[in-house]
Image 1 (spheres, one colour):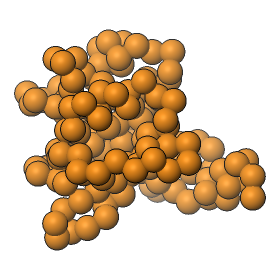
Image 2 (cartoon, helix red, strand yellow):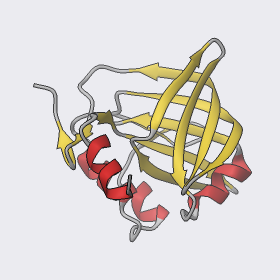
Image 3 (cartoon, helix red, strand yellow):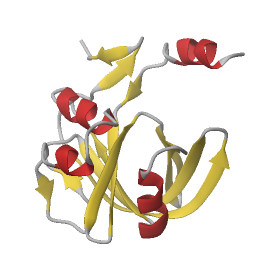
Image 4 (cartoon, one colour):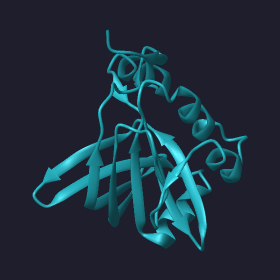
Length: 155
């Protein structure tokens, strides 16, 4: 199976959109991801994936902490800003309001999870990060979804 076939088939599966952030040497870093999932409830462990070619990997691997910001249906612009490789980290973070926290947590999301990276695996063209969740909070609203090559909404 080639990459395009896999992308087409997996594109039929709707996923939520997150922006995963960290702070390294006093600077915020973040990227848009739909490759996030819960792995274990006891202990609470999640995973997310990041392309190997991303310069953001260094920040995550050095800081060993993360926040997963679960985007709401009104946050397409934030998703796009953090997905665009032409945007600097400063340009990305200028778009969002942050809660007071060591790791960047966005206000006005559906929820967030904070945690510590416990393992990193080199798999294909991505690094897979496993993290133990230490804190989180959920808020009301509908998720921003992605399927069929574009954003989708619950009806």
